[in-house]
Image (cartoon, rainbow over all chains, first blue to last red; front, top):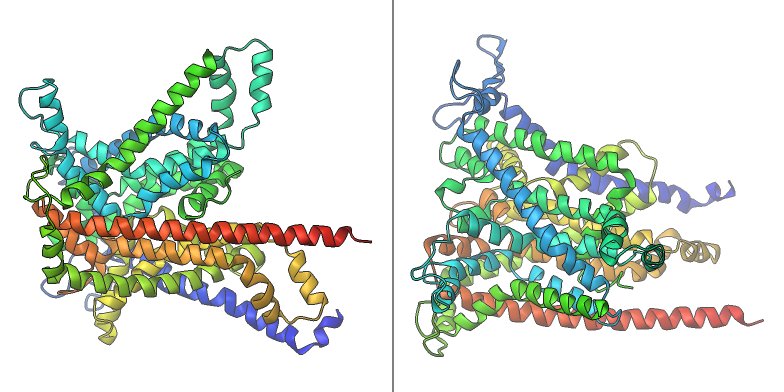
Length: 325
Length: 282
């Protein structure tokens, strides 16, 4: 090409290298390297005193000290003991259970919500979406904290219940699974609503008319046309809620009781309370392996269905009412 | 009849969920003006919690620290995120693209605890090896930027994908150099997304507890860390006062931003209108 004669073409490839190289190097140092360090420490023996872990290569004995027990002990407390009956397994199961329940509640509350926003007058949609996003932009921590006051024994909800004579004495909601689920559903609801809205608003209304002309009741048309066509949004919303909910750290600390221990907190305790770095690392690695990887694979399997997730993310995050048609 | 029913149901459902979404905010604003510590009964109006807020040195110091961290994080994330978005949208063939794409997207789905822990292990390792960096401001910024970069990338990427490259080609044909094309054509078109990316990563950083808890050192506490510490101990209306100020600031910010975006959109619509009429001329 004649353009090769121009001096800026060389600079173009240089510029290209810079544009690729800068974020690539950044992520290699701050994402990839820490991940391999995590993996490494999860495989070594716990150290003593000021050394939190021993090196994998024992230079004195000249042998490799691979400590797979860090992983095995997650599933079995002691050799020969019962399998899967450890505090870690139950924390994992509890985390997955709460994340699943949260995603389900968000779907039940969020689907009609997104549906009605998508069916509202086009003129008011930007304002409604803005109203969904506004709490999202104020501190997540403070909004969770507010629930602590609302759900307390002497809190607003209990006062209201007693005033209505539904109960005579306060019902304990705080530090139970009720407060956990309220808090988690509250925080993650916008993550469900926005991708659902993004698919529902694009739905071709003529398909519903066609269903009606062919004799479907509105209820049947909804279940047979609208819901299947919004499947991509449902999957996207479900993942956007489920994945961060599994590793949730703040909400269980503020709204959960000691029996609502989730895996995020367990990792923290192993690291800072027990000072067992290899165990904490092994727990973190298995969290990635058990939760993130299967979902990522499923995601890839869905192919183009993943697009609404990116759309939902962008819509979530972009404070401007764009993409609102 | 059916339509009427659907509209009523819609109105009821929307109102209920919006009440649910706004209840905690309303609750904190109301009880930040309460005259006593309890938060179930409004006993009288007072400014005492706002005064207590101003006197609380931990909160004030945490606020300035968080502001610094969030500003630097916002700028770093917006710049690196824009770079990353360009790479993903424009450069389809280069060595390690799959790895790159995975690394940019991974922080979006990685639990924050895992990000915090792995970065802590890196920082401790580096500190043991070269005696630097001390855990604190810098390490928190680096941690927040990892997350901010990923979110900034998503925002800029979605704008870049709908960008009409014919504009750049036209500028090239008219003799503009690559850097000129970027600064005169591309950047003005994606500026709004970059601002959004900055705001987003600023907010994420200003709000983050988990990564800060892992990466902060002794005596270094961001505002969310201070609040988290108070919150675990029990009810403290000073936090409601802080929350109310934040709600006011965010509402103002969001309104101002959306006015700016709407004006920008109108201007762009007008410009394309002019383009269209111009091309129709003989």
